[in-house]
Image 1 (cartoon, rainbow, N blue to C red):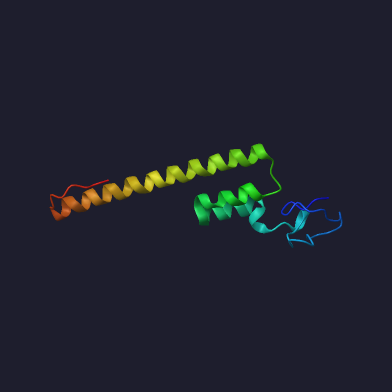
Image 2 (cartoon, helix red, strand yellow):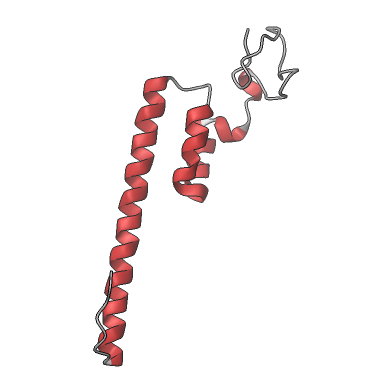
Length: 104
């Protein structure tokens, strides 16, 4: 059997790789499980795609689909935040009565 992290040969009975120390099978680190990836995305945003790429529990096609979904959700959220900030700046300009144009 090969370690999913360092790709070196290890025994079938090993719970952890003797070369890199990464857990194997049910001893997989939490950040590489599906729920762990979702939590990482909530905290790290698009940087959680690293964990998607490294997880051994998903196939290549699943990794690509999940990465695209994560990027789409992040772009949607970023657009929403930018839209709300633009509206807030425009409202603040109207309230303050400044004639300075908003540069975006």
